Image (cartoon, rainbow, N blue to C red):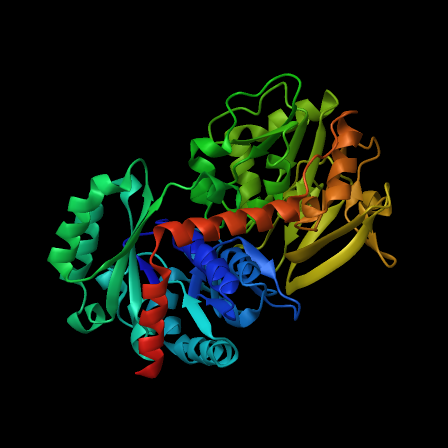
Length: 490
């Protein structure tokens, strides 16, 4: 099991890289994360959903996503509440306090059940913790870190992020504050995101080893290629790498408002991979640039709340003005719902029952309901005929005149809507831009000559291979595998 000294220390990426390295060594390997908190979800073939990080890790293992790889998924709807998804299905919507004090303890059985099914099928299971191993205030009834490790008697490798500073204190301090029986399970540590010559940190490694008696299994360098892989945590949108400051007039400029409850923002990754395209995530407080060619409103976990957020930023005025000037607008999932005339929530699925006015760029209305759609989809674009693969994860149904001209058609089942003037479109399909032919056609439809030059799926596979090679160079994987075998024998 890989746990971190804090959130966003790179656990998900390192596990993905080690998964691919183990696969290349001929092992059957699978990922597992007991509890994840993310609004970036992936649809599984059986209609369930898991965190997208586990879907990427499954891909690194040569596997399709499966609900047992992430049995508990928390999807925040607000600062105080979240949907709880258990073994792929919606279990409840609850407050943070209710989950921590009541519901969490009851989910260990489901977590262990999923783990045992995975463990029975593969040579190696790489388990990812959540948040920080040293959050002793959350230790009671824990199912995400040491509570789960103790339950299955798993060895733990602790990951520290040197790029954020204080890595020596964070690792040594973890041993100091956690329960001694939890500390006994930690058998090693890794240093992640080191910039420069790793030998310069030899004294730091010695200090940690002397302070903890845990051996170092490696110093992982800062990996630019890892940043191109699909990311799960929205914190990456706040880093300079996600905003291209060197945009030029010859590139197609796509602006994406950073919604407060943004979901499945990796829908934009294939577009960000294109040399002819600049994708800019617009932070709160900033206007959408006037020279934007396309505005994409991404998915959101709380459509009505993020509609209010858009209005608070003044983005509604920006989007409407840009549309009047001929700029294309695309809404995906919740972003699609926002583009309609009204959004009704009669049962208070997202909070207080209400009906609100949308941006009005599409002649459609949406009504929320408790029924949730989670499905993988193979379809075709109604205008180009190109095949498109993706998935739907949403609540609510959308109807109206503009749905008579759908974006996609799957064996007679239409999806989405296109405005009368053709400038605005919306779809419930996530992942549509991973289809190279469709992406190429879509870019060309916006500006002639801006077709795709990327085989996106091949690029992801190549990046996973490069990540695995980096893991082999910088980590003593043999020692990690020995730790796992010793645990299995014990």
